[in-house]
Length: 330
Image (tube, rainbow, N blue to C red; front, side, top):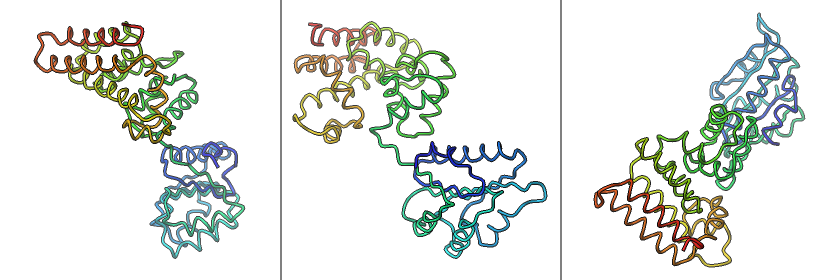
């Protein structure tokens, strides 16, 4: 069952079993359960306990009505750590849960505690919400979906840039999308916006500039380059991003035909979700052009590290050389 289904079943009088390795998705199920209980009983009590501290007696105390409220929400975290002698008590309660209590059990995945999970899954009063791990190939889709959830829109290239910048941490990706949507209301989130937002991240700025240059958007590449230099991004960081981007294209160009995307990703040294984008980008490049690009980036790299008199001039010349080297630019 998807974490989104957390709102489909009212948590009072039942047991919500949250399983899986994705902490962000698990937390969303828990927050949805809290909200549902609060809507039903605004004065309800909330108790959060670590499973390692749970005993049969303490579970009975936690689920009993308090002096101040009859409705209760009890969250048990890290269910995999619950003592084995407490398993029977949890199953016994879950078999006939109290109508005024919402019990939420959170298991963070793995084999530990699987025996208890299997027993709970057999009970009709237990509703499981499983968070599957988001694979690297699906991270861009996750970012785009997060944009829709907050009422915005993240285009694929911008989502790609965010994943490149932040990595696979779902919580960090979701927070970045939310912040960008708040800072740029009503605007589709583009690579330009991502680049400006992460202006302090040299690797992101270099990545954005290289993306523009290698895709034939020379004017945008030059604009972003000048802005990056004005805001203190160093030349070596920019040439480093260009070198990585050109190297990926060259490896893809030289890869054997007919390979599956997963195998290509290993060959090229990029996450699988990047392969389709690199294929699109590669349409503008032949072997001769890539050779010119490799040489231009190497020259600029040497110059910004001391061999040249003016880093800005060297970097602009690199971008213009790449523009000429693309198919159709020569």
